[in-house]
Length: 211
Ligand SMILES: [Zn+2]
Image: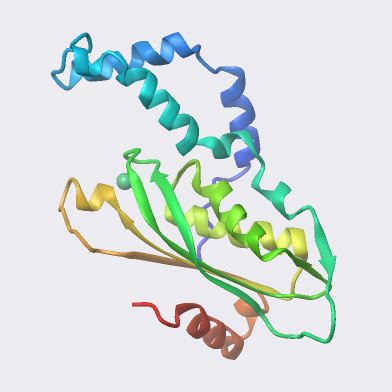
């Protein structure tokens, strides 16, 4: 898959710069009020008085990923136990993110697999990793690649495969209004990128019971 990460600029440095230039809460409230006026609303009518504040609180939740480095959730790893030598596969991890082009949701599922070498990580950490990257403005391709590459660099497994399937509200609510259209992205690293047989096998496993 093509490299969709922006060159040189890491997510981490983007977050740090953004934090330095962060406007005050009052300025953010004023910005939401401006948008309300721009769409033709009266931000002072009763039903909308508290709306800017509610929007900001919602944003704090939607975009909590900027306050964390998702790689941190993979810090605690375990030496592989027993003689288990198969892939670790977690399907149907919730993906709730916002597209960076329209700031509207895209919602779906991630399926994550890795073939351990020496290290494994708690299963729930894979969901937290996906969640950390999803709670930012994203494009689905980058989200998929970031999850795969972060796992690859943290666990140094033999390979990683990630599939994300999501419905983009910018497609269903506006533009061509194509309800039900699903976008599927995949990113493969290591042995799954190099070996066509293993790749076909893991993709089949990840897609099982889907579609
Ligand atoms: Zn969009």
